[in-house]
Image 1 (cartoon, rainbow over the protein chains, first blue to last red):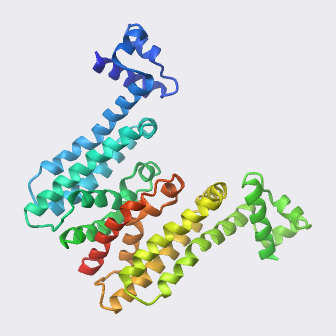
Image 2: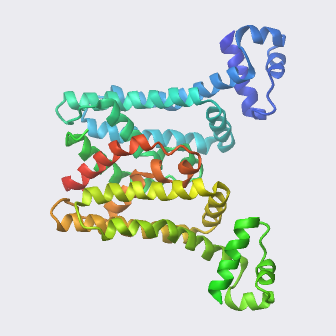
Image 3: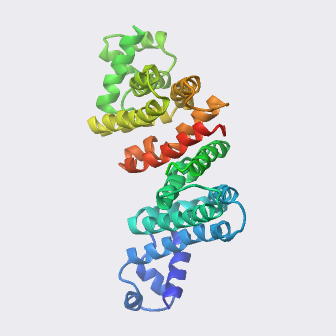
Length: 188
Length: 188
């Protein structure tokens, strides 16, 4: 039932936007009372957070292929960053308004963003840890390094730049060249 | 006279914002006809661009001290990036509304931004070139490396993040550690 309510909320948000999607509309859409919806969720904000979190998982999940992959960590790290950009550009191209809606839902909740960022950094950390095991990288503080890779590539993948069509894909190789050389140098 | 007109435009923009600052107001402020203002400038946009460019020079100029300085290039590069953040945070703290006004003026003109970015990257390139001469850095394509340092640190100094109070100063050291190790590795 939680799943059905979230799916209905997602459909209505997609069609009408967050301002015009009330809990009572979600309930009506499912032919139930809004008291019934409130048995499953605390508030409209609660539902919006879960919808946003689900959308962000849809961004992170395809990137697991780079974590699970065999092969040189350098290739996988570059693939991961380019994959993150590609997933966002793809979602933006399919439906720019929906992209903006989900972005603003996510921005409305610090927790949702924090969890998403932690999720992405865990993926980066996995690849780095693997690179260390394979003897390709020399990193002492893996979570610090993962954060640095994430923050050092913001110019290319942060929603602010992606949404503006200003993610400068021709700059990413040079930044990754420097960052990866850093991961090999044992400075972190 | 050009200088006096720009100064008057700056004063009025500061007080009333761009929407409410018309060329005729600038002229009245100086006790002259607006035809006279148009003898010196082509349009209101022209004046706004010059005011924005002047403001951006005020951000770049203090950073010359890191270019002119003697000493290890690594220290000067770190100083330069931290200096860029500090100058912006200082301007933001003094007058957040004015900061937003200037930002939107600058954003309105691709040329003004492009020139400013080129200006900043020349400063970075100077420090890197010096580091190569001193035998501290190993860089083949200095302008590519300068761009990478600028874009790799966007998360900490881009006006979007600075304005939101979300420039994450505690992350910059790790990113600079990796980037500088890259500048020493001869990968670019």
